[in-house]
Image (tube, rainbow, N blue to C red; front, side, top):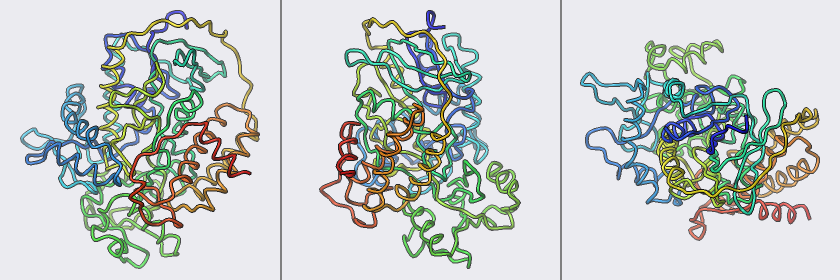
Length: 514
């Protein structure tokens, strides 16, 4: 396989990686993904849609303003505005490929409303199946694009570096075989970190592997402390937790406690349509106080639930809940990582030969709290930008003789046990509400687990967790999705993005352990 690989490798088969590969065509590219294209990554699970100024009277400037307002004071405004200005063109790209976006009777896009948006600008598909429809469309497009080779069932483990440059990637296939794959350009599109937490809306492969790989190779990581918790995961003890899309609240669904009281109005005048971090903390507090939290869509959607929101309806019915007549139990769940591998506006990381795109990247457009439905938008805008930059970048060959393919021993049972311990630890101490004491305990425990882990994939999960916990410990304030009970106010002196390396993280951990 190695001898005829394309010189460009994309790790990850979600929207960001696949869209980038399509934009690179006809330049040859290989995609390595743990699951089949079309169902790979969190993109497939996305319900709301793509944020874009498509309604008459809306503008990219309005969209950028909302993005900055939601981002807790640390959004890179120029980058956010650039993304908003490219939004419609990228949505039109998807439409041209066959994505069946909802349309008005006149043929125009039919956008919906979501929290913290000042206009209706969420371009969606059949109410709540945007991610699935987009990925199905792109999978068909990949199948008819001869320049793209797809290798499914490959789990990336490590970036191979030479002379400060990324020159390849090491991955394990489903049979346990380890492959060293050289490349001239490596693009990380590995997704998020949700499965580092006990309750998450993310698929199993969202384990923070890309952040760990880049950090171990020496890349800068930005904004790692900012983890968004979706306030309305459906609380039915499923892993991952199914999502009750924010579009339901945009259409008028209310959040109530077990007594039917809209408690969020006590926290923010926008109630259910307040920014996600505020809603998530309110829901979390109501549950912790024993009052529960529920989504009431009986009046707003009612009997139209099966046709307007079929995904949510199906998830509820599978758990014995009829959302047209009953309340939907909800809880906050790890949903999106605003942080990740630092990149510039072209998707370049701090390491030569390495680009990052999608949730694994930190471009600066999300700040401390991502605006709803900007995630799929970021994936396609920066997917196109990375493709253009890779194609325009001359690369000199680097000598490397990869090891022969080989079998890796199976992970040890204690490594699996450590991951289960880790997920509980992250939810308890690095979750919706944090404290200095809890974060310190988390850093100590994760560092201890790292010293015992033998499986590299378990070690990668622990590494990313340590990066997130250490960055959260270092930010001694509350901002956006990062809330510390011991520092509940924002500090104007800290209104800036964070940047950290693995060396700095290990120094923090060693100081805590001392």
